[in-house]
Amino acid sequence: MGASAPEALAMQPVRFEYTPRSLVRAQAQIHRHLLVFVVVVILVHLLALLLLDHLLTRPDWPRIAKALVDTSGHAGSAGAAWLTGKALDLIRHGRVIRALLQAIICAILASLMDLDHFFHASRWSLTAATSLSTRPWLHSLPVAIAAALLLSYVAHRCNVAGAHRDTFLLPLTAVLTHQLRDAHRRGLWLYPLAGGASIPISYTFYLTFNVAIWPAVLAQLSRWSPG
Image 1: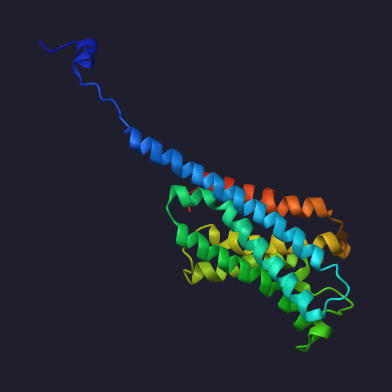
Image 2: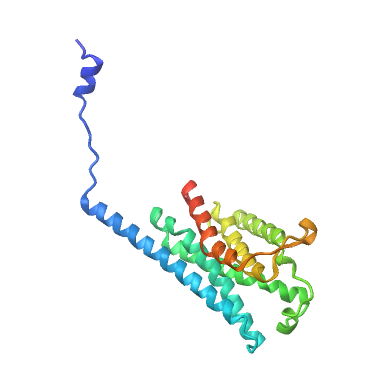
């Protein structure tokens, strides 16, 4: 006779999942290192922005020095925001080199956004590019996001960096960190929406967004779907 259902269940071997203590300790150590990494990047990011923004207020500095400082701030903020937000992926997928390369690309994109000053001035003159009477088109938030979408589409079609969400989030990070950093001085420009109005952004909000809010959004998106 066959065994009854309860007896059959009782006869089945019970499997216990056992995790070696060494593996648990290794995982805990990795997470501690991750936490230290994130904290260090956040602190360096914040202190660097405070320093660079302060240097931009010096009236005795030449245009070229201020331009280099401003570009460095845009590049560093975008790269640091990406690294902070993607730190979870470093653990989940072991893509350290990929995350670093993406951070560099993000930094380059953020710094290249200021090239529209020269196109708007119609000449390669730093004096003309920094003395514009109107803001260049790529410094409009809707236009910049549309440009990020276009770049994402081109990258997706060319299979650059893989066909996943990072092809949009990476240029979007460059756009948002750049726009928010400029916005605390000039406002967040919504042209052609809202009649081309500019929304005033406080210095505290800009720092909080670039250093913490947007990286937290990136981290949450990394948890929701694999990279």
